[in-house]
Length: 614
Image (cartoon, rainbow, N blue to C red; front, side):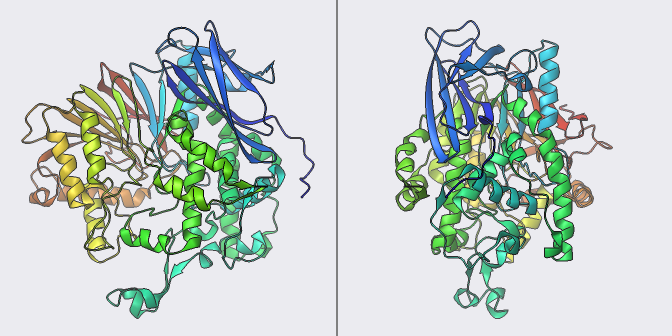
């Protein structure tokens, strides 16, 4: 099939600095030809190793690993670097805060940027732009700046896709000749225009006849969708869609190749036409700010972890959900497409291909001619158990996989699973002991807002855990008890800083064991979302309810699973001293000798708010 004739740029995205360690630095690129890339760091003699992954006739993912020829890279210091393409040094003025991009190999952490939940078509501002401005000002002032960007989930929203984005995806697949997979057996309409906002009607469902006679759905004769997202009208389906989606989420120049906004909206119903227009306004703003995001990621080590929306909403939330997916070839295919795309664009860079790179050979064998066949590779990637990772910094960074090692209920398949099973929690315990300070990344907050967790528990008791995403640590008795026991041990860190997201609002709690055997402090720092927000009016009501019902003196505290821990809420200077903040933001965590010194929110609007840590 002949590809459209267009003038393609050489590099669509990159360099993006991924894992940076004393003996190795990993850079990530998206390019249109299998170019030979090299990189050099000023004043340091290095070797380069390139890994190229073909994803289309005009689309390649490249990882460049740099190692020093002698000794280690300098630590905690801005290192100017240059990239050459086929022997020609590239100019990256647009990615530089000065004359060339710089990167830092972090060791003693003094500043960390953290956030989650970046939805391109949400009307809020992308707070990664605020992070870029913070880094720019630090570079100009020659001050010590943040050396690590941690993104703890929902970097993309595969289950909540804007109409214009789906059109852009379709166009980019054609322009780049992205390799397609074998067609799924779904009764989708032939044209994309006929599918817009209606895909959820054609996604697999569990027939009401197969549901339990004890469930409401059986008696109302209502089929249950396998994909439970309430915004699944444009849910990604094919592997090539996931690939194009990632490119469009991180590449500004890719948007110059497509024109998804020229569309006859008369083909849509009036509500969908209005929705398309609102999404168009938000996406245009998103595209305009992408260059700032690319500059940010070219100057700071960026590491990631999946949560549900990277694949689909409610991913592995209950054993019943997992069972429905496993019993449908089409549903399994969609979920695995999301997981493979995550592995390519996020997972490989997290460990610089050390563990995740072992899957590459079999992945490449899955391409038959110009079509993917993932029958064997699906089993391989589902057996892969090394999505979690650590950084040997001070404090030590421990990033948790809370999605693929779940503690499933054996009595009731509709019960929410624990976020980590016993084996994973024991492994976590071994990682935490004998460290003074640890930075623990958990996509969902370990210590959440009690009134919201109570509401979730009520819905769960009514057999509706998927309605309110019952995905808090305290929802599972075994996982909650084991985690609290770990924190109470006398050989666990004196300072544990938990970074979380997921909930679309931000807060700062501090926790101490009431009956612990040593003095320790746990910080729960939640930053969400990067480009997403919780309904502000509703959050205001919930904050007041939480204050009234779960005050220090309240007897309701005795009925929570964490009654053995004293949880203190810290107010911010946002609004009138809110402790729950719903405003798109990325957090700045400043540390001194491994202890929390400052917790601030860099808002998408450019404002900065701080939490009182006293």
